[in-house]
Length: 340
Image (cartoon, rainbow, N blue to C red; front, top):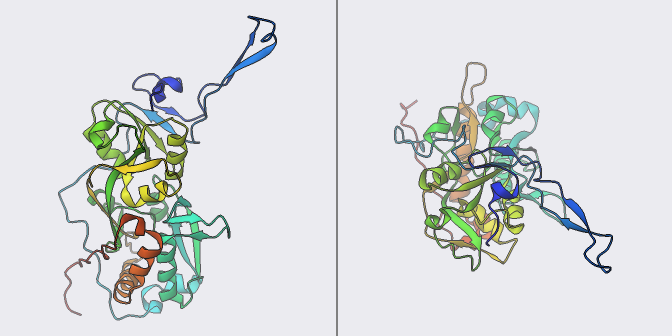
């Protein structure tokens, strides 16, 4: 995939950060070299970058920490014997669960082209939680979020939960809380077949697409000395960028990459599994005015149920079998509590 570097192609100098406004304007010039070409304009067009894209060759500000050994981020509150009316009275009174997710993550949460309805692994999980709260999986409202605004949506009480392939980290726990993990992904690399890229080390000096505000972006900067990174709002934008030869590779969790490869047979996932990415349901931190402990226990209760009754394995088989045989749902870890 030899081509001009993204920065050069888009008029961005070394080390610069620029919004993806679409690159240079197409230029036209009259060709009067001969009678056959007289008056026929030549067009040199550059495909526009995805809306909101940023290009950078130096570490941008605001990335999540790539690692933090100061805590064990995985333990969560154990489900109790209370019923939903006791655990989540405000949500029950409202009559619907408000869920933040991505509407362009194939296999996890995306719009079915035939029905126009949101569907996917994360959507199914949201409906299972709603089923346990209301007895009806349809009592859920979905709101579209990007990777970079999902934490703020919880902090600002715009959504009840975020189910958006969000890794549980110590850094994120400073701002929000999480359920126990509902899926274990691993960071990998995706490239065009025959590109010569076979591992993350091959990304040195290349152009790589990531979603803004993700742990994948942080690890990429920590591993590479020379790299041009295109940060976009959604992974669907990365698919468009690699198809338009604006980047050489994409790096993120294998669960997301398998959804991208399902849309383009010329792409392949390469290299070994890198860092583990345990996905959790994001929930706002408990405050005196909004005690979310009951919601955490409610979500964890649903996760216990779908593990025990086989629902999780059925969801995996339907959506994520491209990753191989079911690895099983991650084993939960709970915060030690005094007996009640």
